[in-house]
Length: 181
Image 1: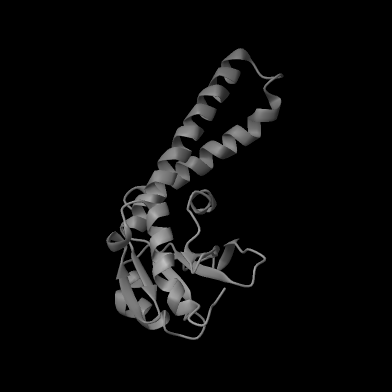
Image 2: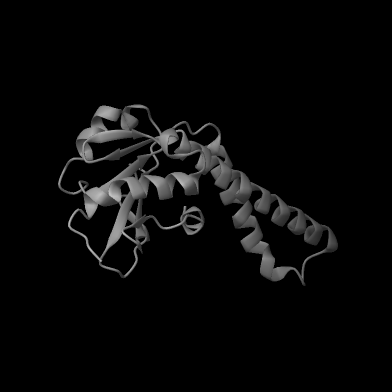
């Protein structure tokens, strides 16, 4: 998620660019974990909700939640279809564990094991790309909520960075209605 945020342009309003304060929740272990919180007073907040069950993703629940005091000034982006993302994440975690375990020992392991380590490093890089693409697809298939209303992701574009910038620009006038340069 941090990589995806880094690739997105900051939304602008009245000639000023506003940085994202980003949070992540999975409905289980992670609750409003900070992904990126700039040291600026005027930021735009987004909460990425990585939820697995359809019951957790119901629009009525998130419309209501987005209008509560804790979330009223925060854009909520709920993930859509996950497809095989969970299995890719598990495979990536295993691959990273193997690479981290043997990477520092490459000088002392046999040629066969060194070759296997190289193959695992290549596999890990491929899995990282697949996971990143899967996360993008899952969120682009999801829904956006802000101040008691649902917004369609596809209305803002078809790429993660574009959607993030455009939806940010669409809600900035509401967030900073008294803002002047």
